[in-house]
Length: 127
Image (cartoon, helix red, strand yellow):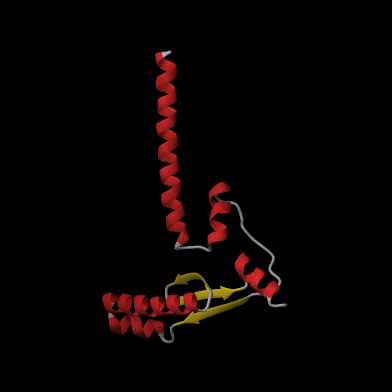
């Protein structure tokens, strides 16, 4: 009986640790990918997640002459510039219900029509 209880306790603590780790990963992913993609990513790590969309608009924004800016500004000033610029883009996207997809280097990618709420809004408005 002692060994059964000890095993059950160990499993309980292991499950608690796994739940806490999953929550931490979930919160990190909330900042990286659209919300509706997180659960499929966690359920099937490494699996391809792709959906067919009837309509979508994707915006790619790139900083003009980025390499020149990088050479002249230095690392700290460049990071301040990118952080400021991308934070401004995040606020604009949030205000207009645009989904931020990613930032890579000097590139900012956002879209509409890619999350379930966008599709429902399009149906409701007759598109």
